[in-house]
Amino acid sequence: SLTVNEVDGCVFGVNIVPHTRQETTIKGFQAGSKVNLEVDLLARYLERMMTAPQAEHQTDTSSNITPEFLSENGFK
Image (cartoon, rainbow, N blue to C red; front, side):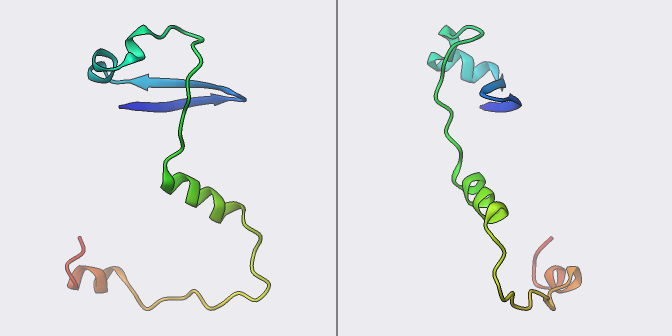
């Protein structure tokens, strides 16, 4: 697992679990190595939603779903 934990402009700091380091080409990297980081699909979708212009005519987004309803229907 590789987790980006710091972003400063175009520079990223990462955490790498030992197993990933041992079993991948990451073990040959040094500080300052250039790598390709891919954004997962969910993060890309969320970013698009957050930066999209608001609809001119918004629809009602209220819901009757409550925590009790979810619990009664198997969600915990």
